[in-house]
Image (cartoon, each protein chain N blue to C red):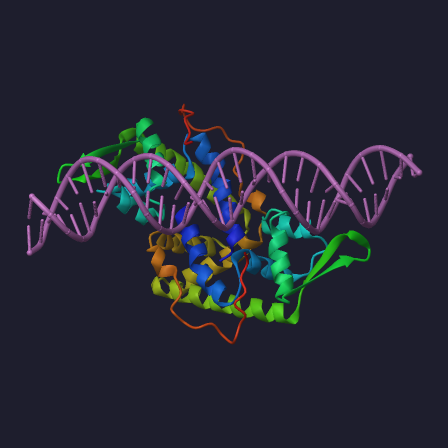
Length: 152
Length: 152
DNA sequence: ACGGATCATATGCAGTTGTAGATGATAGGC
DNA sequence: GCCTATCATCTACAACTGCATATGATCCGT
């Protein structure tokens, strides 16, 4: 998969998210909490591929905006229970709708068969739910003898 | 499209690229030059979504490794002609094969219909050739009144 | 010949990201 | 009670990224 493509798609979502008062990570957090609350911030960070120290500010902001609740878990006060508020759910839904509308526009503009586009969306949906570790290659050795020089 | 997915896929490629003595940007440059040489570094940077000042070191390394040729354009000596060497082509091909093999493994592991997977790959291929600007949303106004707070 | 533009290159700055470590609070096993 | 582990939080450091700027070489139009 092509790296600049991923970067371009990410960059394209930013204005839509900004228009909904969200940042990329804020949106990712809301999307994840949309499916189910979590019991610790560390678990959330691991699931969304974020750094546990860096999402603290994200969660701070979301909490200030009234989009999430964040309360010590009575069963284990080391962790925080995180869940969407009603406003958070609304915000997430509206941002998601806008982004998906733009995706539909982009995909429609490709002029590809509807079956391909539908297949694409289905695979993408499943991929987005997969564990990030499942994308890693096997421990296969590289082909041939290659120099070990690498970019600084 | 889901941002963490893109990040996970990118991260998953890194070990394969490293095993082939390449970095992400080095690989992206090789991929682009595989299709056709370019006449200026600035044009290359724009096409691959890189910063023109930052790819200098990338090109330096690729040139040192004998993977690209980089010669002043006799028609306009302000620019450099960039092209793959035979070794560069081999390196690019082998890295690409390894990455695609891993992609096939991941996609096969999803257990989805072959038609969906093929459609996915076809759409992905077209998307990767699209102009990054085409992904940007229209100048539509956001839905409803939303707070303007944003993440620091 | 001059002025403006383009190209590669180097550099600075601010923001982002990944990693590591420290700290305090909390929990569980012995 | 003590030791170890976990969690959130804070901080430092290095690398990366985007943008801006400056410089020298080159090119083109007047």
